Length: 303
Image 1 (spheres, rainbow, N blue to C red):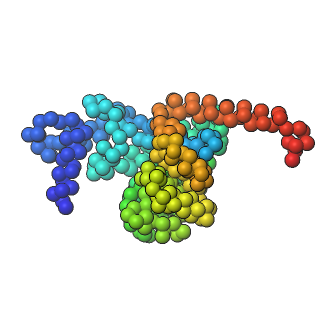
Image 2 (image 1 turned 180 degrees about the vertical axis):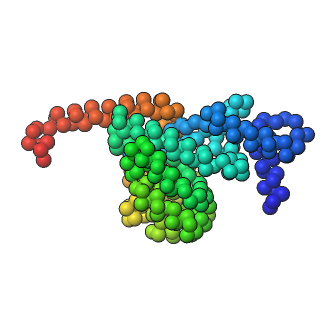
Image 3 (image 1 turned 90 degrees about the vertical axis):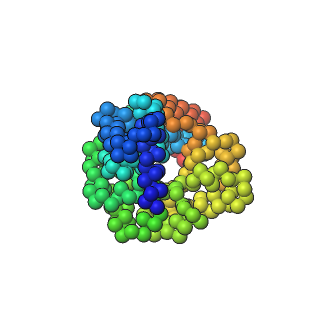
């Protein structure tokens, strides 16, 4: 296992650095990769895209923040291409704090200029919660930007076995005590996480893309319906991700799925474009509501 892991690390280094010379030693690769990752922070090469989330009627609810690396030679790299390397060099903590700070900064602006109802979320590896000061640091970020904690959702990623670790559970309860929303979408083999849902301090279930893409199968469709019912029974929000086709959208609407995310609705967009979309959709919704109110008589409206 160690040799296989080492080979994967070397492969990742080749891929990220774009090294074609196979004679470069693994040690040189590792040193070069570490330097590149550290430089990504100082040169502001990491950035966030935002994928909008809407309810079934098209009302904007918020968005999920997605980290990218604008590599000077390789172009845009997606998380799966560099997060393991960040973890290996002990840089994940710095990235997660940077993400939380940027998300809360945008959330502050969105609340001030558009609507206080919108929610933003970001992904967090469960293993990050072993860093004991992390929950306190999240609290400091919320305080710095005067963000209502219930408008920030932390989407938990990683090995589901960690949910049984007392240290992780303590950290999760601390985040909930702050008021943050907690979401999970990785149900693992045989969806064993379902048996833990009642004991976890979660506020949201995300229906994973694998299930959404398999909804032409009646069994998968039934499982999606049951996840929606479970979320409702546990008083949790539920959102379907990776909704990419009209057929998937209609099937989810028929099942009563209240919230959606995916390319059928919106592609990930940079912060500037997301802010513009937020503003336009919110203004459209307000105009629509005003028209509805004008059509009511004063007596009806008071009702």
